[in-house]
Length: 264
Image 1 (cartoon, one colour):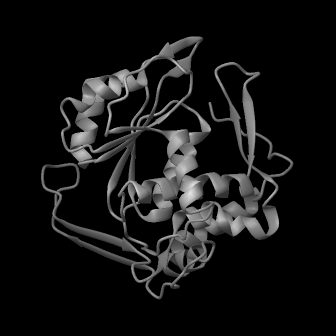
Image 2 (cartoon, helix red, strand yellow):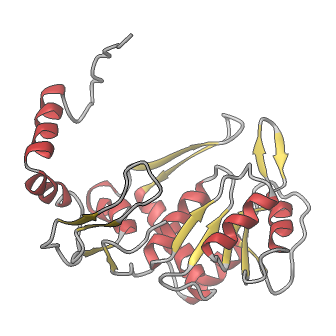
């Protein structure tokens, strides 16, 4: 049975506006998406909206044919800037992230200003450790604010992030690291779920026995549990951040990325 729910008080769009926008997207997609693209901040504004190419193929079959789909391909921007920096002039002290831990009493509120600082610091850590534009970074973390910092920091410098669910086994983690040819891992000593600890770093160590291409592992101290730290490979998150602050400061320029560059 279909149900209709009332609109929330602060909803940004009403039913009539949604219907109008939907019809525009169907009847004149080029104009519609040209306007929607302007909702983002661009470094180099786009002039091309979409470039689609379909030849042959068997829908639902074994042959995909020749398919090419490209959006805003001549524009450049940065996803982190659109998530964080663009809000600083008017919302710097507004809350960007509300985090709640396994224990509801364990919570944090992060403003856009604080988020920008944390992300830039981690981005500088990544650059200091040799992560460059186009490199793949695997994020195997619990649900903590540093996971958001990690994704945004990768986007800021143009690295491609691969988020692996913290409940996956060492074998599943290894497969995903190998699939994306990641050379850098961000994890935590342990996660906490349902009052029990999850051995993330130990799982990571087991997975990396199959992934010799990984050069660095950045470890967030979540619980303070006893873990193995491999000299030359493993680095504590807080130590690396402190060093980056001393050497570089709290800012990190955002990389200019093509609209079709991979984000994750």
